Amino acid sequence: MNTTIRNSIFTGSFYPGTASDLRQLVQDVYQIEKDSIKLRLAKHKLIGGIVPHAGYAYSGYEAIHFYDILKQSGQHFDTIVIINPNHTGYGTGWYNTSTYSFWETPLGQVEADQQFLEALDIVPNNKAHSLEHSGEVQLPFLQLYALAPFAVVMITMNRQTVSSAVSLAAKIHQAAVQTKNSVLVIASSDFSHYESPQTALNKDQFAIDQILAKNVQKLYDAVQEHQISACGYGPMMALIEYARLSGNKPAMELLRKGNSGEVFPANKVVDYISFLCYES
Image (cartoon, helix red, strand yellow):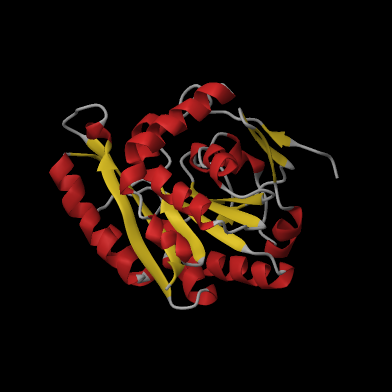
């Protein structure tokens, strides 16, 4: 099999382009947030989480809560599955993996888990990943906060429905059983886009309620009924269903919520919310 590398595309935009600047920015964000991180949750067995994927200067304040709990838990995962929405329109079918051997960031290369990918048996489509930011931006956080060694499985959801989410969750669960790997699942998503801060908060609360209730169908219904422009509700639903299949009394807790207006004041904002999924 030929070795192929998915080069980092969004360095210098979503996150700094050098290792030193990247480490410094993440450390600066951590210093601001460290006293409010719910480290009591680190004692639980982790299943996964919902993490935003905007520029680190905007959504890093929410993301760091999930990743520091992961670090402080001391739990090792063989395979880290990142499920992200499709912002580009490229791809085929309900969801796609890729054939990349490694994913590169300024911090080095992250290996793709070929054994797990084979067990998943999902049609790969590199074009679905080639210009997609929402998976890539999770990788530097993992390189800094996840216990090595680990490999990643990147999945782009092209169709976000209850059926596609349930199907994907079943595939991930079956692959975990088949490979006997310890697995962490990250659903990459921002929440309401370009609404007033209060409107975004009001709309997103309908989604938050169903995420905390771990109800896939009602989460989908809330997104549709209230026209919530969360870009990754499909990955969220897949995580919730995966937790139901594989977790022992799965629980979901909100870690931090904020919006882009807290960083750059504006009349229209994007909401960022992080959650931890764990066994209670």
